[in-house]
Amino acid sequence: MSSESLDPIHVPADDGAPLASPVPLEPTVDPEPRRSFDGVEPSISARGVRKSYVGGDGTPIHVLDGVDLDVRPGEMVSVIGASGSGKSTLLHVLGALDRPDEGAVSVGGVPVAGLNEQGMAELRAKRVGFVFQFHHLLREFSALENVMMPQLIAGTGEGRARERARELLDLVGLAGRLEHKPSQLSGGEQQRVAVARALANRPLVLLADEPSGNLDPSTSDRLHEHLFRVCREEGAAMVLVTHDLALAARADRVLRLLGGQLVDAAPGAPGAAA
Ligand code: ADP
Ligand code: MG
Image (tube, rainbow, N blue to C red; front, top):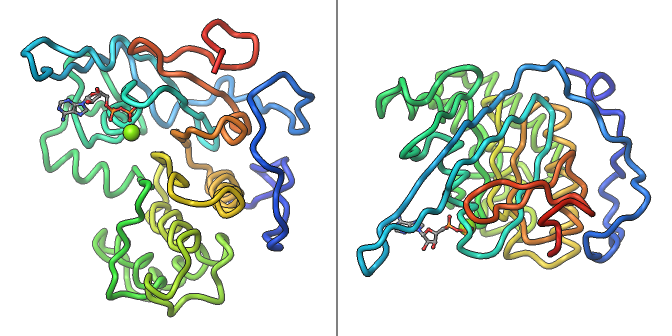
């Protein structure tokens, strides 16, 4: 897939220049045209998803209380919400790391409810990429090997895995760091390797849980430039959980997890107040 076919939006080169500092989510002129995903089959779909945990005193905590969501190829949805509102729980359920108590999740049209544990593991390996706050790279392996690894596990030949890893690391601006071990990379670079690794098996869905949570603002901005660009170029549907409202506002849609449900958090929408 060429970047031209999917990406009408110019992404500035990673030239190291400091990017704009975070600003509150407010009605400003949007410099990027909103893209339409009407009529495209969703890569990930959730309907009526509920999930509760039992609290310390034995009473249930209804973390997800009827979540509906569709995300289409190349579409980026950001999810904001207070700490403890269930954002990580939502990503776990969307990515078949966990099952909902009620409701349905489908990835690439495959209902997760119909899969056993092994089926869920296969779905995750082939169809879902995760980026967490802490990268969890394999310390004894190079950047290139870290991005090759999920492909080798999925049965891709070494030559093709290497080629794909190079391509992805190039896309995240790390063509010059292929042989570096995680300890030889900066925090932001490590997270960019984690982004490349998450996309290694061409997942339909990329789930990112506060991927820049431990990075400084300018490093965080650059991570996200790469994250957005790679998702668009690869046509992955992305759900990005973030605390950064300015960043969230750059997605195609901004949703807030409130009272266990996803509500429109676009400026002016009910529940949009930060
Ligand atoms: P967020 O990512 O928005 O901060 P989480 O999804 O991690 O929120 O957690 C939502 C709520 O569910 C919190 O109150 C948390 O304590 C609770 N919770 C999360 N995981 C578990 C678990 N495995 N067992 C019990 N409670 C949990
Ligand atoms: Mg969380």
